[in-house]
Length: 69
Image (cartoon, rainbow, N blue to C red):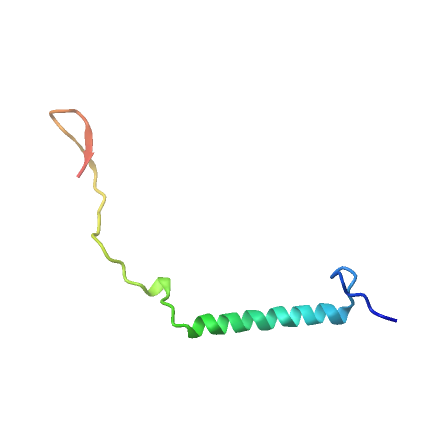
């Protein structure tokens, strides 16, 4: 008798095992390719640009508006 494995719901355990193994192998291959590609890591990149320090607000005598200096 022919086994109908057209649906994962009706598939037997052997088919489920094959699907899980293929997904695992594809994930490992993807991780190896990405690791070997030499892409820079975001956490190791240096930050460029001015450093801005927040200070207290001061009130201008002429306008009465607050400004951060």
